Length: 491
Image (cartoon, rainbow, N blue to C red; front, top):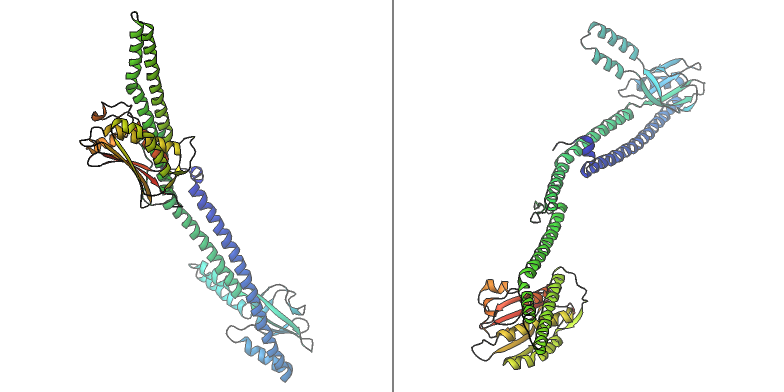
């Protein structure tokens, strides 16, 4: 996708690349300036030390033989390769000997170290320059090379120590600054090369990393537009690189999956209300019509009203159960959580249902392997256990032997399991056991028993609220409903 420069600079990747480039460039410039200044000071100090040593040597020569010996030593040292600058002049500044042909005016007027670098010309450079100019006139094919050579031989800078001899003659000992200048030139070229490499590196980083990030952001934006358009089945792309984009996409995909689940639950609730609650409402209407049609006794009207009230109460319970399931599945509930003693909850529920089991001819037993506690809501756990025990009592009556229901509380690994088992016909098919926890689902064998098909659905929602699980397992014979709670850290 082609982008203009202003559009590119609005991207985070381009801005970061530009900021890093500016930061690196500023640091490089400051470092180079510091190193250049430090190196120049070090070279200057070294040069001054060398000049001082030369001056001491010349002073000793002057002390041995006076001016003649000094002149001979200066002439000898002037002719050596890479020699320092040597100059002896009379009191009027006329150069007598040395390797300096001319100086910047005013250099030898003040005694001591020169305050600023001065320009000079070595002895014989004027003749060399005239020869090169003549050669340049004769050979115009290479004027640039001659100009470079001539430029390299003139315009020297140096620092020096100027002394007055006892006879008032002037002696200058100095050193050329070509080496520090070449060093600064190398540093400048290195700086330009470093800045160029950083600029190229920034462009390459943007091209290979920034463009890839932009493509991924574009793909995420495209997927987001599809999702906002109503396609909740769409998911954000995950490349598998494990970077921050993948982590963001995975979290958003988990959120979308959760939203899709909630929407599906809402749709299911609407369908359940539209289909499964239609029958009791129709029955209420028919009963009212039957009561109003014809002449009836007062007792008949009373019985009809009592039946209507009972049906209405059952409908209210069903609506409350649906509302509770929806709130729990959505993760929102006003119910508070605290430490719950499961052993006490088991004893209370068993004691509550013992008369019901006895009336149905069912043996109700409990086995608690210890005192176990979980983090949860006692009322919700009690309601879930009551629904499961009530179902077990209902469906154990078709057992081939003595009907029995057993409630077991034990710890298995890091989980506390509360199991309710019966010895009835059970649910043999795996698919039916999975469907049994859905709302308003009543299997064929349970059609003869009263109920709305919400008991196990509510129990599953309560276990989800407690970060637990609800499993339906074959008990051979019968069915075992297992409530698995995560154990508390203090147990």
